[in-house]
Image (tube, rainbow over all chains, first blue to last red; front, side, top):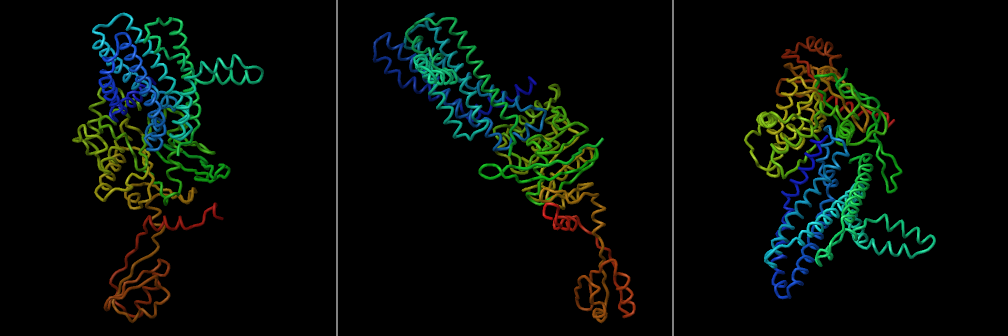
Length: 258
Length: 310
């Protein structure tokens, strides 16, 4: 099982690399280079804040866009091109295929984010002339961004297991946007009464809570991030992703391929 | 134990806007294939051949019925280690090279890592692609892709091989090459189940064939028996056109070239025709039994009205 899973994972990663998905790194570097005069033009202190804000937001957005645009085709493309026929005619279980594709895309996104992070540290070193221990907090923000990728990829995979790529993309982006305001939704739920309270509370907890995964402002302002938040976010992202993947597997296991 | 045993396999698709109408694609198929047999699954386009193969490969699920491969239920994933499959007009991951693709499929099929690369190189040599190197599949011709397709189907040395229209869309040279590969598998004692609508290929390769039409099995038999069953005619050639008028009604067809008459006669009336030629003192040149072709059998079976139409 492990060898089949790793084979599918690595093949998905190789596909992304050969389809030049990682070329977005070049765009990212260009963005950093092009905006560097801006950092120089503003005063010390804010320079670091702008750099971290801009670069971490870019890592997050680039990753989410890649997760959704590749995620919608992860299963659909294999069905359309019938490559899945030569997979399912082997001793590969359908859940292994889904999980392998998921891990492959997550690996792609993680490598992408890791390379971008190296770029950010280099940019920080150039603009600040040195790196401090506080800059290590950047890693926590990147870790949370990767947790966010886990969830977005799982959500996209769930939608793509029963819907067309366009609808999957729309649903996934919509859920990502709503999830960014999950905190506000929970506040509204707390203030509501009666049936509305139940409904808003259910909705607030059903949508992915991407708000708690966003610690970019804290990192930019050099504020500490609690260990309990790291544990909570890790468990939350893993459980939410597992639930989404389980849904995708349940649908895909019963699906008649055309 | 049969290599393939299909019992009452049926598949219907839900059609229409609300998916409430049921359209049968396969109706109660019963079929057995012996180990080591090369079995042709014949039928016109849309007959249900690909549906059957997709059901056997677990790509779609049957509405009713069951199937066993090498004595095991086809839902048993372990059985797939012993089965190879080439889909119709296959598309492979075109960003991979042929060795990379075969390595991937070998990993999925559980081929052991030691000696795997040598095995894959030997396989590429066998299908005539030993020198393709790291060229990506997107640069391959259709014939080359079909050979890669056969290589991926046998990369794990399966006992039963399913081929869906393996010669479809190939030029004569490509068809010859693929036919040779299938013949090689047949000689190696593999059970081969292949669907086709190219009857000459089935005639050249198969031990037995089945004809399917409109989702319904119309006939099964040994190729040679089927040919002889439809071989109920003879060609009679004689000199002298005078006898032609007395034989009217006994000849299926006739052609006159100068003084020579070439006529097709049913075997039932052959004695009568020869007797009349002797009476007319016509000079007999030859009497040749006409061998029936698989095409005759195929056309006869597909023109019959099946249960679905009755």
